[in-house]
Length: 254
Image 1 (cartoon, one colour):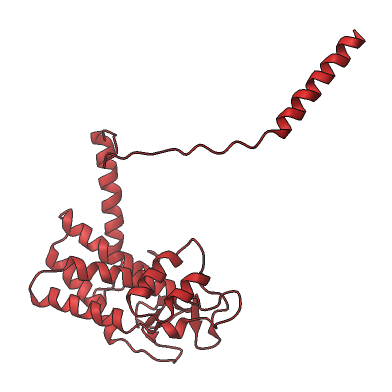
Image 2 (cartoon, rainbow, N blue to C red; image 1 turned 90 degrees about the vertical axis):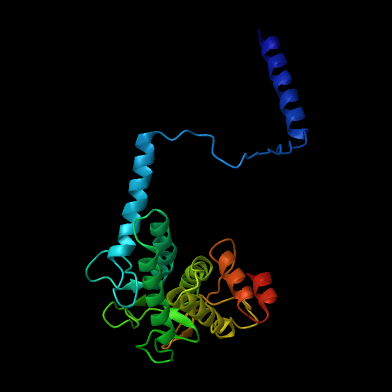
């Protein structure tokens, strides 16, 4: 019995030794093919649910935007300020409303023009109680004044989200009429006046040449820049397409 136990231990040792000496297996590459659509039949109940979610989302933007300026609130709370990111998301949402026939194209175009007109005509300065500076805008804006609230930052990424909505507006509103012509004109002007170099981090350090996360008139640039696999992906594409100098250095460090 003892001999049998010794043999079993020896065999186990040999197996473990050979297993440890094997080269690690390379992960198999898997190929995923797409036919251009999801092979799933949506039931009438599921279709109703999805349409309901879309419409409820659209109604948030419709009900929570400023009737004159188009700014969209950060949330439904009565005290909530507008968010420039929420406003940027609102632009394609109004167009979705057009496509789903929840709102007319004329209504959506006018709301969008109100937004763009507000941002274009708003005060740009280094003061503490304005809407923006150097083509960037404060993260949160008071719904009653349209100016900075909560001592928030002049936000690079939230300005980017706003501008992505504005790019959508320029591409969607292509009709030859006074409102849509004006939307395209103001979109180009807003995109063209962003001074990316103002948000550039110093050329040395961990975040060298990257786009700063923000700026405040009280403290200057934020001490961190956008880098890595995150919102920086779209932000640097936007910056490269709208005139940022040395964008290659920024992307290399980001």
